[in-house]
Image (cartoon, rainbow, N blue to C red):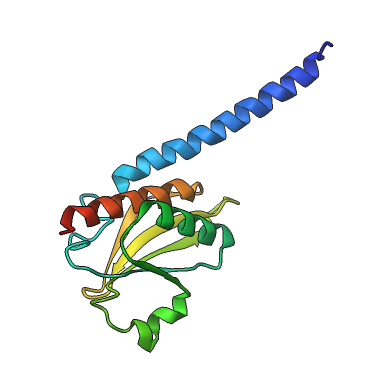
Length: 160
């Protein structure tokens, strides 16, 4: 059975599109690994030195919530709690030494773009400092995964 030239072109285009998309996601993850470190000021220098529980608030974005759950569960093995952002300010989480760090994000749409991008950061509740990841991307799964991998590396460095 012969496939006409048009069908071949469509199949080739779809294959190239998928390959490009996969490559972009993979490249974001690789780049994010070097952008989500203590050296790049994306992780607090005190992270992991004391036993704390990382707070991970949910977003209004369902996709983000699914991805942060997936990558935190798979890549970060310290203690963490998923919660709603408003819960951080309740009596239950007021101990800023026990719940010192918050892993969070903000989503924005750049000017003249229809694609949302994300910016990830960690808030140190003791010092009131925010540590931003220099990488931002619309392929934020790779950034979240790289952040969790590096948080785990730093945590293990100080584990007794």
